[in-house]
Length: 76
Image (cartoon, rainbow, N blue to C red; front, side, top):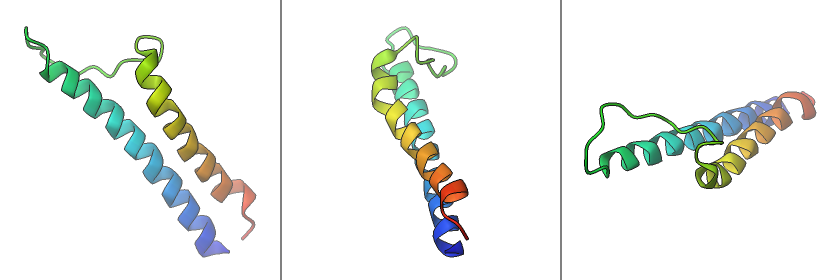
């Protein structure tokens, strides 16, 4: 059970990292597509870009849920 617990926690962290990396990649892509150029990449907050949050928010939530499942639900 300990291996399952560590595996679920690692998988949860990987899913959260993928969501954050995707969020940054989309922001950087939008910055690169700007015709006037931009100096720095700013990751939009959920209230600034609700469509992006609607796609990547559940992915991040899934990562949190898998991590919590491994950390507190699976007994080891």
